[in-house]
Image 1 (cartoon, rainbow, N blue to C red):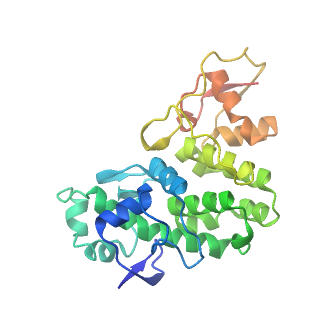
Image 2: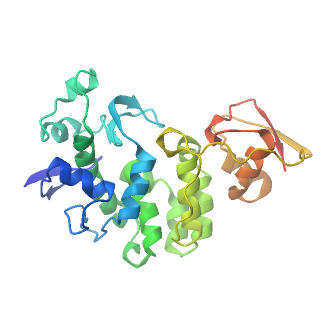
Image 3: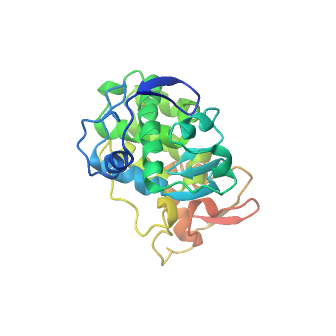
Length: 276
């Protein structure tokens, strides 16, 4: 047994897994009766694990994620307070990793991710009191977001949390897209928001995608030019612009097509956009 702590240092006891077993567990090759089932009772399905793997990707050496956080492996936050302890439990030196002298293997990355997945499920259950009664697909959206954002980050989605509590999944999806996070992670947010909007029914994954699961450009051949224009301000996102000017955050794709935008996060302050 060993102690594992989540992003914010909340610790619990988890049974250690061999590297290959942890890799198979998240990659989808292992039965679900595993320690990855959280205290909240959430057991990651094969489809969920595959989606998470596609969203997170794998990097052997440190990189800055979409929020500017130093990360390695499969979404492992090297800046968390307990990063050194978690790595040390795997026989890895944080200093060596940060100095890029010690790459993280795929097996090690999956094992660290398995611990974080358990913590993410617990965070989601803590932030959503009705978690156990939510549709399975909605639970998966919330755990995916908690894995990406940490419990503290997910807690900031107050309007989305209120909508989920009321069972208004369409509004919850709009609130997900109307966020800085949506602009940072691009296609991941769009895919998860669509799953939320459907009340948990998974949407087809975006295709084609770029590294990290981000959606590539919407279909070419933009529609006829819209008659209205607006100028992008600092902090704007396509979904936020769509909600403000069109009344529906999900219409960001129309704006993207109209302006030939390849990635939602590519807009910049001062840029002039045509509106449908």
